[in-house]
Image (cartoon, rainbow, N blue to C red; front, side):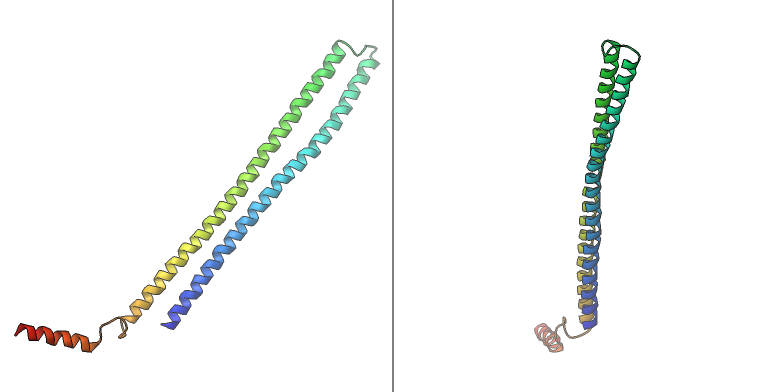
Length: 168
């Protein structure tokens, strides 16, 4: 009986350790996803800075081309510069929107990983409860073969004699 109890205890501990391990893995996955979300934000800053630099270069080249042609920076030349500026703002808004969508996805991945970790831990707890029940059932079944859990023989004989005496 001691062996069954020891094996049950060992299995119980192992299931608990496995649940904690799986939860820790999912927590790490969540942290990685959150770090990737932060990286998306940093990448956006770099991309916007690079875009602004390229846009300023484009505007400078456009001004140079207009002035080189002999025209003044008025009328159609200004309309081209204004259209470029408006298009640049639209592009920057699109970049910002895409970054926010990417971040939201990464945060959702992190949340899902944490949920999976909690689920793995809960599964381990349920397995532990099952182990406790199985071990308890095994111990009770084994104890039925001994005097533990049964009435002593003397009580059974006493009841039989009492019943016999009453019937007379």
